[in-house]
Length: 179
Image (tube, rainbow, N blue to C red; front, side, top):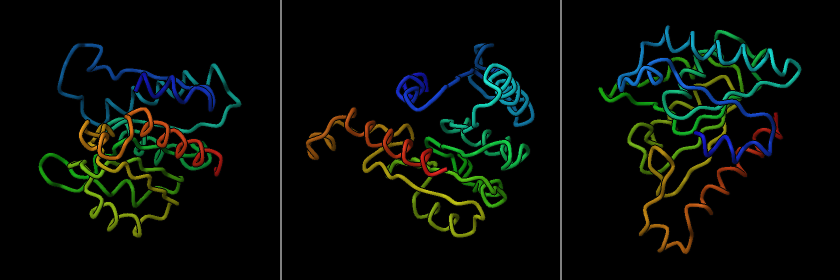
């Protein structure tokens, strides 16, 4: 996310943070309540430094899921939009994680790769009509969970990962402009 923070800084003030388990050097993430506490603290710190700025949460994988839960608690009046880089819709155990998505009222942008096993596009296509919130989807053809496209697919399309990332950044900019 550090690279995306730098890339998206042209759109506004971007803040990053690490969850506590990362700072402790652990691989296994904390449970949702602890993740929410840390996410909320980072949000409160950002708001204290830039109190009048509109708030849009962006996260990668688990960070996007935690951001969705935090937004549900904060409400649409306090969070203007959500940007999910590789939302983990299907857990490793195969269970869908769509409850929070169906409960959201805040506009959301999904950035998903066609090779993302944690968010099969056909499953996301079933969930999106059930959502109350406006949702948009930017598909990265050949992209994995990290939105990386394989070298062969890039070569076949005559593109680079930088081209793909430019398309993603443009989708993010258009989404933010629409809010």
